[in-house]
Length: 210
Image (cartoon, rainbow, N blue to C red; front, side, top):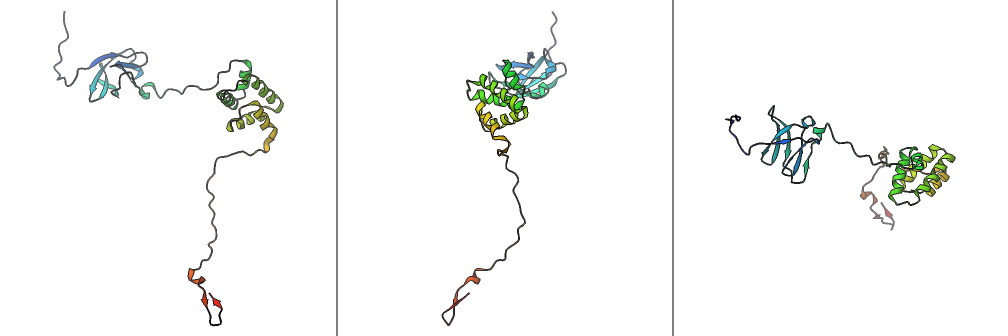
């Protein structure tokens, strides 16, 4: 059978190794993973090792499609540019399950932050307290309750009784704010005298003068 003719090009260093790009747009070498552009999923790329670097070459064009530092076994070298930007951050918001939790989270981000904080401190009566908070919303209005929830989260007062106390205090409570800019004033310059002006000199009649 016919075999491909050997290349007459001088081979320097280790010969390239072909690897198939998996569905995660990565290739594996020496128990490490290296990313390539997503358009190459399912294709094969040539891996060339060069002084601690890994060059991934597209065989059909001879172009370098990715360059990585040699990774340790079991690790991965991933470049966000190969995936059209960084991965979206995972959603850490609450996942309401009961109808009460869904109604409470519908109040907005302040309610979600309160729910997350209350769960973090281990509030075991959270289910019944949410019903109390919904009742406070019906009595005081949604705007007042969401403002109270925002203040409760800021001061880590994460129980229904705390929100009730904030509502009872009304709108006259102080609202902490971040420090502003330094206050610079143009003050008048006071006249000054030297220390010699305060020297005490005795006189002939026994008095003193300055």
